[in-house]
Image (cartoon, rainbow, N blue to C red; front, side, top):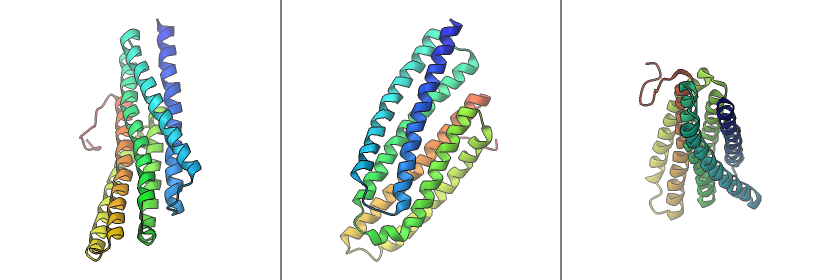
Length: 228
């Protein structure tokens, strides 16, 4: 049974690596779209985003089923069980990250005032870059049992929250002078929602990092200060 168990667990993590790579490709595409400053997304890029989203959903279901079957049938050791349960938690967050990428691309297409987007472009670019880096480092942490990268990710979640708060304050100020401009108001709402989705990607990266710490050290730090 040990050989079958080892093969089952290895198969799970082989598929997990495939899923992680697709999600990272989606994030790279999102980062490219945002940093380019363009509001028009090519049909080719949209097709790739949708294709990857479908792959993410299929892999998430496949790996989830494998994890359940392995736990039920193969009786994994405690350390193996922690890793599998952490992997399951991460799967959920990776699928949600994929959804947020699609959301961001849809929001960009809805922006009707390019000059407003241009005025906030640097904020969005920096936020996109940070959110992608957080996910990348959190996944590296899980795959390589790297607690330092996990902690780095968790601590940078506060940076994401601060950026989102500053953007909202700036949008509120602009709203006061845009009461009669329908397109401008609509674009402001769109930018707010777009930033919220980028912030959520950072939150999911933090969840992945927390799952990593649980897998490596057996500590569940959710809802706790990282210093505790």
